[in-house]
Length: 334
Image (tube, rainbow, N blue to C red; front, side, top):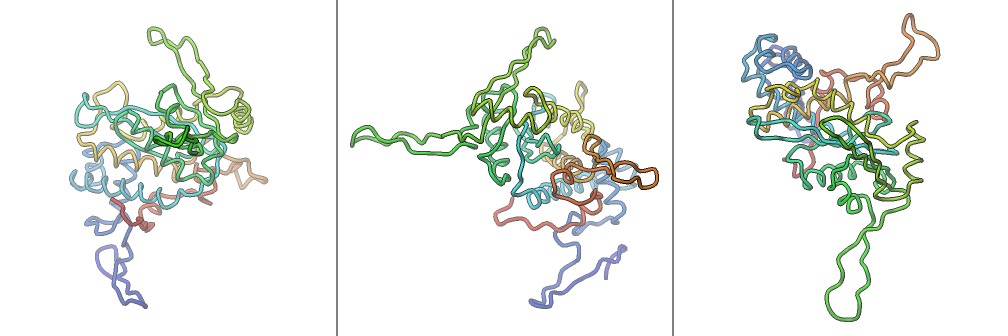
């Protein structure tokens, strides 16, 4: 053992390679105590600034900045490792703005959420353009067990309408007219089990005047089936919009109508991923609680996180458990 925390130094019985028990965890090669590192991660998930966290924990602000990058990267790799072959009925997508570098440099966060479990399946950051939406939808489709059986609810951004057939449709090659010339471009057929509805909000002088529902891909029957499963009466993006408010409460760089912004883009990227990890695995969601068959003392409900509701976890994870869980990035990870 070594260090103040008495970290075990292990040796593989097969290859005889030696390594620390913290290998591939967020605290690997950390120079501060485990208690302080966990406290820093907890404060960062509660919208504390770097300097405020440094004062509360008793460490240098540079240490907080380095640990933020580490826990953000760990959260992203943990998500990549755990969230695979997901079975869901519907997805909601939305974007929220933020800034990095200055208030003149917007950096958007786009997310894909399962409205039934409130679990955020995909998270990407960048400019709000077609490339961002393509990354979001492609990443979400890769994590689904059956990407051709999904109902997608989005806002009126045109990129969703353009990219939905390419990501969730089935490609086919049209026949060529005649025997000469090039073959037609690949086209995409929407399966009967897939559909896409856009919820377009019309405003006048910043006041909502009308909500228009556009059934742009697939059948209305498939949309209505997803609404019945969710218990909704009309298509909406209410779950992901509430998630946007929660995300702003968990990151100091996402506060609206203020001077808040991240000084660097990589800092904002790490804060976004760490807040997402804590939201999915560590924070119980009030709407997901279940009534216990028999009361346990004064406890009437079982609190659940989005990961528990989706079946990815059996209990509420602590931040310490997330940080000390080894992750094994796939080859080619950057």
